[in-house]
Image (cartoon, rainbow, N blue to C red; front, side, top):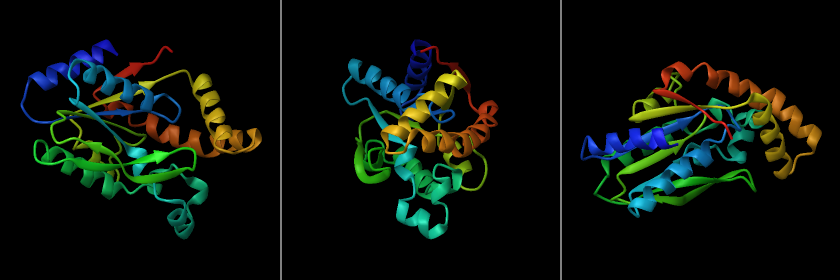
Length: 209
C-alpha cells in the first residue's frame, strides 16, 4: 500500500489537475477494499482530497439482464453499461473544480446498482476507481483505460480468492452448491479474461493478506 500511495503522491505533485487511479484484478482479489483504503489514507492527510468510484455501480440491472438474456452471466464484460462508465470517467476528469459529480454504487445485499449513491466532490484531486475490466481494450472498454492515469493490477492466492467468492455468494442468498457452481462457471471464466489484461496495467501488486 505504501509504495502505491507514494507513487500516487508523485502523480499529484507533478500536476495541477485531477488524477484518476484504477485498481483492477480478478473477482474476489480485494479491489474494493484496497481502493477504499487508498481513499481513506489520502483523506487522513487532507479531508476531501480523494473520492471513490466503483465500476460495479455500472452493472446493468437485473431487469435489463433478463431482457437481454444475460442474467446467468452477470459480471461478464457485456453486463455493464460501459459507455456510461467511460463517459462518467471523462466527466470526472473534466469537472475538477467545477461541480460535484454523482455516481452510482452497487448494493451487494440486493445485487443491484444504486443511482447517485456516491459523490465525487468538485475539489477532490484524486479519484480511485476499481473494477474487473479496467484494462480491457475491446469495444467501449478502451475508453475506460484511456481515462485512467495509473492502473494497478492486484494478484492474490487463487484458493483464498475462490473461497472468498463462494462465501460472498452464500451471503448473497445462494446455497453453497449454487455458489460454488457460479464461481466455477461464471467468476473463474471472467477471472481468466481479466488475467490476460495484466500486462496492460502499469504495475502488479501482490496481496499478501
